[in-house]
Image (cartoon, rainbow, N blue to C red; front, side, top):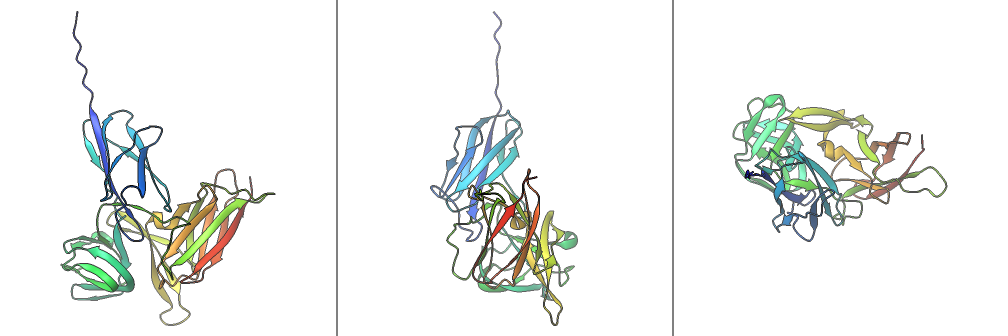
Length: 305
């Protein structure tokens, strides 16, 4: 009898999750991680880490569902080479993303941010045109309006900048999240334009303009950041506004048809133009008048094709 030896190459997947608004780590029971179409649940830790260990090397791709109370659900598709461990490292997520308003030596200035969770010195900094440097001093605290870099040579006023805090995955607040007072919150409910107005889940919403100014993208350190030049009606005629990554301008409705966008209290957002789409429905563009520092709600009715 011939003996046949069978070897199975196993893989592991590791990630770390934080709340996008507070940047606090999300451990159990606040968040769950599961493999789609599998009873497997991750080993989770209070510091936000989740681990899927000893997985089969096939299928070549795994789909991971991240869910948490009052947070938007998220699905990740990852590929893991046989016999290896993959640490999920999403570029551009746990960043401070700003537009430069001034440069003095190696210090860059930007519009004041009410609160910045700590980013340590030595953190990577990416700018337009292939610029890279590191933080010379930590960036943290209240009303932060600048950062000291090891070198700011090559940067220009008006350019976008990414200051990397960590490689954590971020979960965005959902429509029923307990937002801090004075946060600018825009909640859109998407329903069918038919008798009964049934909610439409999984509709895709994407911001196309802010205060009437079109959204444009710029590559920064391998990540596309989106911004808009907001009209002021005075001097200067426009001011730059950082929207963030594609995830910041795009969201989907939940089972009740609700979706949310949020901005800091000082953000100069007075209107959002949003494209709303889903297969089987006519895409609609909707402009919503926004009340800064308050909660705005609006209804979008989609017509079946």
